[in-house]
Amino acid sequence: MKITKSGFKLTPLNRTIKIENIVTVHYFEYPSTFLFKGESHDFWEFLYVDKGEVGVTSGEKVYQLKQGQIIFHTPNQFHDVFCNGKISPNLLVVSFDCNSEYMSYFEDKVMNINNHLSLYLHTILKEAKLTYENDLADPYFTELKLNPTAPKFSQDLIAISLEGFLIELIRLQLNESNNTSISIHEKENNRRVQKVINYLESNITTNITLENICTHCSMSRSLVQKLFKDDTGWSVMEYFYRLKIEEAKRLIRNGTNNFTQIADHLGYSTIHYFSRQFKKIVGMSPSEYSKSILNLAQEERYKQF
Image 1 (cartoon, helix red, strand yellow):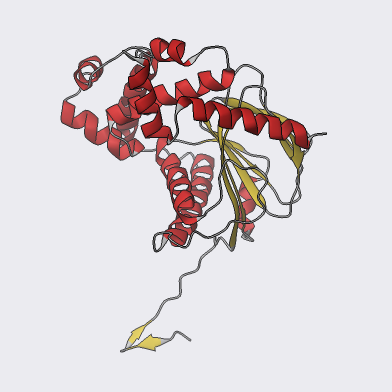
Image 2: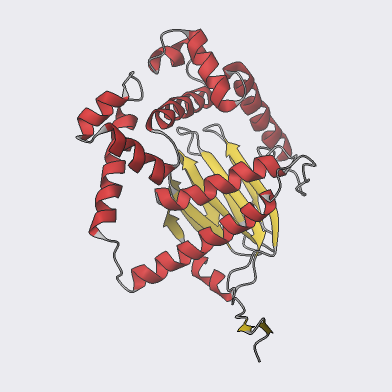
């Protein structure tokens, strides 16, 4: 029997995907030679390749994941991570408790994450940085410690974003099974945004303007800005600057170029301008970032002996 209030019947919400607990949230920027010896635990985990590529062992299978791909590890499934010695990856790793029967959709799956779905992941990472005191680059903590100054509702946003991400992934799987396609209009918008991204990536070592982008992509300034912001969450030029800095971080992790060479390669007029933009986006100077990566690699090598 339904409960009523003021003569209205209340309809319970049947929630099929519910995150019971968050266990860890990590964001790793590994050097190209990194190797993690592996682990297993009794909760779910996913690894998302934000940049670069990485090798993953999951159970008895070995996968090579590229940028934009995700893999899920079922509870008690052994998994490890290894780099290929050439490309330095950025990885988002989230572990959590969820007892829904629908989690079976993620078993032994490697999936591609589109720009829309990646916004959920960016929200999870952003809110986790605000919510917890932990260094999310530390692979060894076993407890997330709440930041007493965390913004209100930040934990709600993490839960909602994670649940929304999982739900949309499952829907995507079901839609593909039913041969459901997106609208022609949405496909065209996706194509336009991807054309902009391709142009930005191909010009990462040069200096281009928004006008250059609009001309190349045959779109008005307002259309480019709206489509790109709606799809990625960033303005076009902010995305471009972040691409440059992500490439700088990769080159630093590779260790084959000094900071002046990297700045020159990416089209910066001076090392000082490069350093200022690097610190603004990363939160630390290039030299501080380089030391943090070196320390992480040394800690992991120590752990394996």
